[in-house]
Image (tube, rainbow, N blue to C red):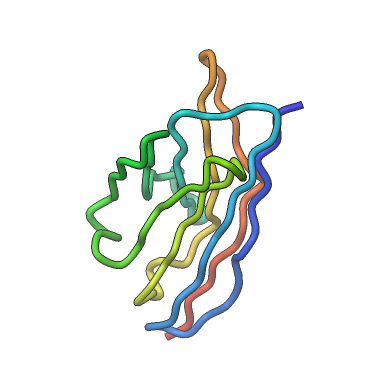
Length: 113
């Protein structure tokens, strides 16, 4: 059974840092992503990383967030620095395989001002 299990969310003050982790099981995804969602809004792409380590970021997080992966552990990370209140959201890990989308359960990140 394919699972994506996230961890690392929490409450942090503005300017602080958090590191999210997403451990995948059963499938080795080539491309993995982090999305985030706030109440009443669509889920939005935050960062993407390929199996070779190439990364792309939403403009809103460039220079502050870093996506990385450990292919041996089949885990993807999102290091979030200089956090802002507008980064508050539920963060989801995502992978696509053979036309199917797989999502983690989500982890809440709350940034207080």
